[in-house]
Length: 217
Ligand code: E4P
Image 1 (tube, helix red, strand yellow):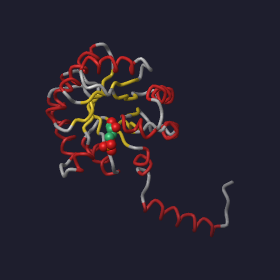
Image 2 (cartoon, rainbow, N blue to C red):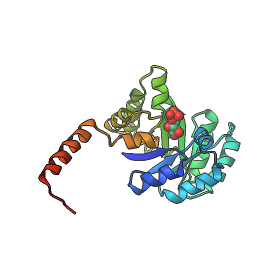
Image 3 (cartoon, protein in one colour):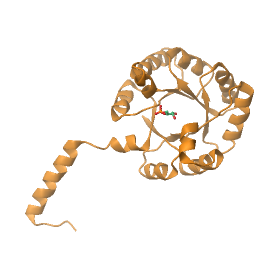
């Protein structure tokens, strides 16, 4: 499973990237707002840190304007994935930009039919939002499973990017189902390493080690 980081915080991206935990990055207008930085400038900096796909989202609503914004964002670096919303105009823009050879991440996907349309429009990535479905009492993971089944039924090459991941269990479950990629905030990725039995075991080992009176260095 590929790991994308869902943030525009360049320090966090660099730290995780040094650990080999970053296969790509996703941003959105809310994350750009949180960063307090100019979208073109911060996206360029992220593309300099990470070699995998960096999603940058358009904000236009009409296809021609989305295409123009997408081309401008894609000109930042070769590893930009233009992020387009799953609307009819977004699908039109997806068809055009993917035919021009740009990576496209179709975002805000909440149904298997939407995912089917994105694949047919040539999306490189589809982003079903797990957490936001869970928020309204719909099982987000069921959607990941349904998209996996449908894409496999027809050999679609669009990658499933499990998005809106809020918990470590979301990561494990998406991996079990076979999502190609997951994108999560840096703090969720860090939490993947945590286990109380690891901490407890380490404490016991260190106490016993102290009793040996030995030193390694
Ligand atoms: C994905 O590309 C989105 O940026 C992100 O996962 C949305 O997550 P949220 O629902 O926690 O805002």
